[in-house]
Length: 212
Image (tube, rainbow, N blue to C red):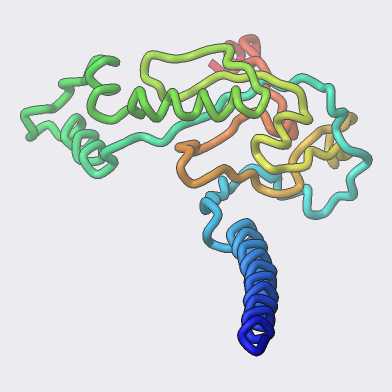
């Protein structure tokens, strides 16, 4: 009888201990997941500076850019071997250097300094995984052309595109209110097309002829 009571008490304490341990372990896992999602355990991000027109900080947005608006973007990738490239440029324009005016072909430049095929594909995969469509590639792999709806662009680059009244022209323009960012492992240097604050203007040939 004493043994049975002792065994029953022991089993009860063991069951209670295991139940408490499981609760604590579950709480620990929840805390770990939360910490990983909100701390340095998550993949670090890399901000792409220079994408917010300076004037935006002095303007009040009129609205958000319509989510279904389609944008055409040119995504730039960084060059490799920048020190060697700087040395090559100096040599190309130094008359005393044997490499003076010995320019590289596109294939040679790409092989030595252009983004790798793997990096180019990584950027393309990132864009398509966020709902954007690749519309153009280039032999030197420095630029990737993509298109997509504003909603997908905002998710891909973690921005909010707003509409503003242009301070000097009779029109509205759109621009992000913060600089875009991507995961650090995605080799993106620049994104052209996130704003239309400055519109391209064709060269005035008549003015050029007059000035000549």
